[in-house]
Amino acid sequence: MTAPPLTPAPGGEPQATAVIAHPQGNTTAVVGTPPDPMQSLAPAPRPARAPRRRTVPGRIRTQAAVCLFAVAVMFGGTFWAIGNVRDGLSVIGEDAGPQVVATADMYFALSDMDAQVANVLLIGRETSLGDGKDKAVRRYEQRRAEVGKALLLASDLAMGDPTEKRTVEALLNGFGRYQQLAERAMLLNQQAAHPAGPPPAQVISVYREATDLMRLDLLPKAYNLTLESGTIVRQTYEEEYLAINIGRIVVGVVGLGTLAALVVIQVFLARRFRRVVNPALLVATVTVGVLTVTAVLLLGNGAEGLRKAKEEGFNSVLAMSRARAIGNTMHGDQSRYLLDPERADTYEQVYLDNSQKVLFTPGGSLDKYYVGVDKVVAAYPGSIGFLGFHGDEAGSVMNRPDEKAALERVLKGYQRFQQADRQMRLLANAQKGAEAIGERMGDLSRRFQAYDNALVDLIKLHGGTFDEEIKKGDASLGGWDWLLPGAALAAAVLILLGVRPRLSEYR
Picture (cartoon, rainbow, N blue to C red):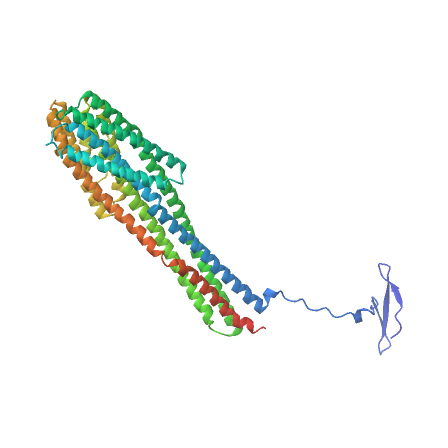
């Protein structure tokens, strides 16, 4: 081999040409870049190090961290959803719910106070009509005490709401004014000592002022207070019910994800370390699985319980309480119809309007309404041909036999009450005032009482459903304050115990 001459490269740089001599005498020229003598002194490049997470310990730590994170998310989602169940039950069962019922009862007590005043004035000095004047006075005093208690409760519950607080204050002021007028009317009536029938003009004038204050100011304010509290209940229910169902989905999805992560890490460890079972991780998997299923079932039951308490209990109690209060106002309108002949037409129209609120059937007059009531009540429960409070109730109790039967008794009682009302008005229109008053204070009063008692029984049934669902919901949440964090902590500890021996092999 001869010394390599330098030959120019295509780019102008000289290249070394090596001449290789073969044994046969032939030569071969090899052109190339001359070797750099410093390259032989440079260290050989080290292979790239794998990222830490791609090593076995790194993969174990990553998978364990995913499992722990999933357990934490499941704990947080379950805790949040259970809190929504508890908040919903608290608002409906202990806060705004009782306030709504209390204001509905207050509406009834207010209307009954005015009805009893009308009865006292209509009876006059008679002692043998109906239950008598003394009993009417005692009922007036009883209702006044009930209104006072309901106003105090409403005042306490309205402390955080300026609008409700102003309404309660206006009711308190108006209630005091009404009592003054009502008691003055009864005092003047006692002094007049008139026979049964319309009292002297002075008594009627004072009572008109009292009953107008009641019907045009106090009762609407009490009704508005009920609506305001009912709005709080409805909004809270809708928000909490939606949140509970979202939480149930979150818990279910995260729970399944956690189980999947635990299975993945166990499969990896089994393959890598040739161990079939990791006891700690297996127990963690079972714990997470049980917790997930239990939490999803609990939230489902909580949502259903909240729905039943609201829709089958609270809504029906409120609707029937309103129907009862309006019915009592109707009964008072019957007395006012006989008490104040100059306003008889007005009271008759108000009676018809209130009747349509309780049970609506087409008819522009009382005569047509009586016929409509007889027709639709005879057709129930085969068909529901009426609306109003009782119509809504009929649609909601279709699948509950006990409440359906109770409503049927209510409707029969309402029908007989309307039939007695028709008889009273026929007597009054025939100028048989004494007989009409006797009908009002006798048979009509008894039929109204039977209808009212049937309505109270129906309200008690719904109230029982409401109380039962609230108690069941509270009881189901009793142990979760410690069970949920305990299970989540146990699962996390088991995960750490499961991976710790495998990581220690790489130290």
